[in-house]
Image (cartoon, rainbow, N blue to C red; front, side):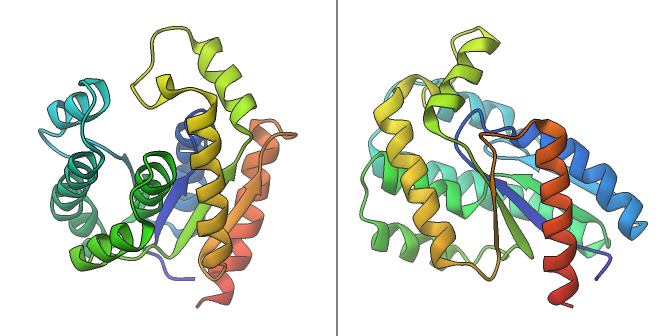
Length: 210
C-alpha cells in the first residue's frame, strides 16, 4: 500500500461522514506513518467558507448554476488543498467529491446525468484511490439530522422525497464503479462497527490495488 492516499467519503446528509473521517485519519496515519489531511466540500479551502455559506445557506438557485458553483469550489479546493497535500506525500480524506455532485444535482435536482458527468470529466479532477459510500436509509438520516436540532442547510431541508432520490442515485453510481467504491450499509451498525467495516474493507482494497 502506498503511503500517500486520496480517499473520499460519500453519502447523504446524516450518514456520519465527519465522524468517520476523523477516525479514519488516525487509522491511516498509524497505518502509513504519514500525515493525513481531512477536508470537506464545499468550502474546504482558504477563503472557502463564504463560498460554502452562499451555496448551502443561500436562496434557491437554478440547478445548473448550483452545479457550476460546486465545481468552481472543487477547482479551488483541488489546487489550494488537495494537490499540494498529495505532492508533499500526505494522505487526503475528503468528505464529498464528484459523486456527491452527481447524486445531488442529477438525482436530487434532476439534471441530465450524462451532461453532469461530461462537465465533471472536463474539469479533470484527481481520481480517488478509494471511495467510501456510507449507505444509510433516508429515514434514518433524517432522524439523525432532526436530533441535532437547528435548521440545517438547504439540502437537508429538502425533505424525504429529495433524500430518497439522492440515495438511489448514490447506489446506482456505486454499482457502476465497483472497482473504487466501498459500500458500507450503515443502518444497523453503530459508529464503531461502521469504522471497523470501513478499515477492514479499505485495507483489502488498497492492498489489492498496490
